[in-house]
Length: 429
Image (tube, rainbow, N blue to C red; front, side, top):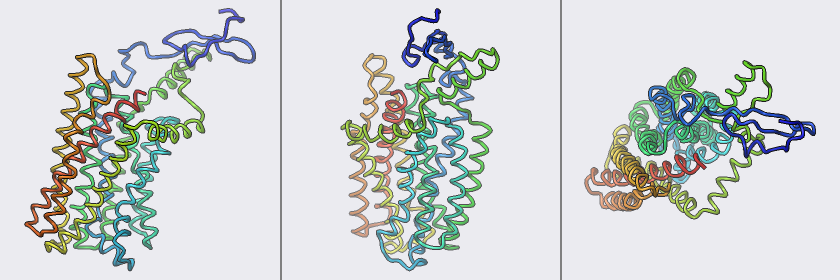
């Protein structure tokens, strides 16, 4: 290629093995583009062996489970917490439990862009350590304000696998199989809040709420430590931009040719641009897309209802049915059973729809939302069932069955929403 060849845009015309020209100091310079060797390239995460993929998925699912487990662990003992800090405000009591989820909102605004800048693996590792420290600080909180703050930090750092887990699955799993994997991954965020109160209920009854935080934090610290070690040993980087950049760097070192560049080099932006996009793009989707806006609001509303239920269980079953603090934890099993039903139903239905529509050549990501139509009916049914039966003081199993319907509806929503927008639209678009 001559020196006076026309300059081309590498971001638009970079293809596998193609030589392009870029402007450097006023002259055209040849650049060799490093890309995957083809769609079947074994270095591409989508083409990794099942064994290699399963290791990544298991570690992500394990770490995802830990965060919501801690979010509700001392929910059964929330009355003890408020008594300790001389407060009787029921709204504040609910906020102490649910502030953890507030971290799920702010955390992704930073965690998501950082994963695009430095890759997914470093973010997983660093945030898991910070998650441990935040939980220990929660156990030692000297005031209600500090307790709320440290729980917020724990939720923020613990949001990492929830935030970029779907991105990792998009790197690893082909679209036709994502629904089932997303369903399995959703077990963590939705069963964790169920199992946490079961463990915390008996612990709070015997040793008080600080032991729930302290002992629970030690358990979470150990579990998160195991997750960090597993991340370092078993997890690998799956972000294509980082992988191709590493491949280009390796080839530059081996060949001595400094004109080698990644085919996705154009996707690597300045930190300010990445953070701006990380904040602006979700807001843009929220404002300009009625589907995204309505479903996001609906998901937030339903998730809020779920945590509101968690804070009412100790009041309803302790004062209305005479349950002990330990036994109250078992009342969360109704929603747990419903969660499993919703996950299995939603995951299988979502994947079967994909395969059917793909064969017809008419597939759209929105088709994964179809199971939500009957699934959303379970939420008001469950809420009415629970509220009516508890107020009427019928047998304690009746309101628990109502929470099972609530669990089905919540999980159907989560599976449909995540597999559509996180697993397909945002990852591929």
